[in-house]
Image (cartoon, rainbow, N blue to C red):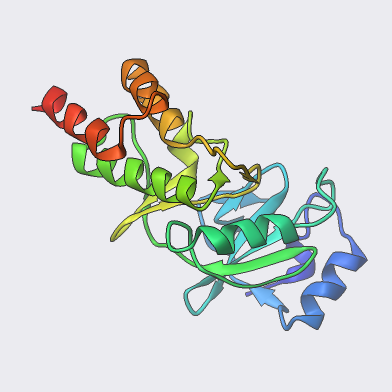
Length: 199
């Protein structure tokens, strides 16, 4: 176990530590594939560090050099995104505690089942008016477990006409289908056409 002050990154911040301690977060596990000094964490991004807490939970701790003042908006959007996203248990200015998803990242050669699952998840976010903004290069933002999870709502916004399905279709280099979708084709129409091209 590691005291949380040890993974406040890249430099110590008293305000971050105090908020974590006040919310009962004193220690995390040194666990994951990302090296952070002497310790290991699950992930490191421009705004936060994700560490394993145990009990099927992870915590995203705001970086002390983050351009974002707070993680609260991200936490609220991720809560709205559930069950496409991991469940959010609690959050504050400097942290989000959420469900740990044991899964693998998306690869360049995915099965049609995974691709269809991702398109349906992307559409579900659109129905909730959430635009993820990182699905043109979805490798780090999708986890495949018992189902497809879209993670990391760092840059996500609420938009009346959210565009996620077209981002995934662009990643698949299916601009033809993206155009059809924009013109009013349903997600099921798009999936049917994809299935034909995969068979």
